[in-house]
Image 1 (cartoon, rainbow, N blue to C red):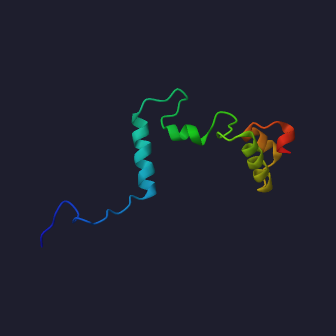
Image 2 (cartoon, rainbow, N blue to C red; image 1 turned 45 degrees about the horizontal axis):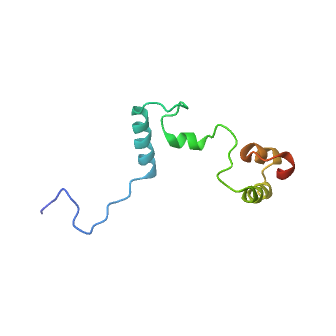
Image 3 (cartoon, rainbow, N blue to C red; image 1 turned 180 degrees about the vertical axis):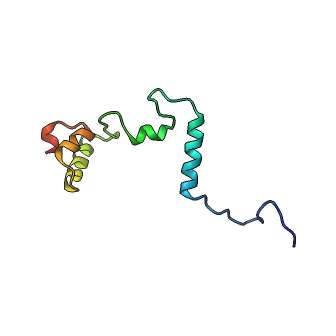
Length: 91
């Protein structure tokens, strides 16, 4: 039987499991210089913002999003902390 190093033309490669992808990313990030914030992976910075964020929404979109979060069970204080809304708008 003949074997080749490459898959036959037209064959699809199996997807790499997510766990393996995360491990590879963490190993690669460990080899990098730390960012100014101290993280080595920029995605870690996005996962834990330093302060309130508006997510690039307009004021009207922010108010709608705040109302949706409250309907989903967030407290007004949690919404204000995350979206930097004045007290009266998140209530």
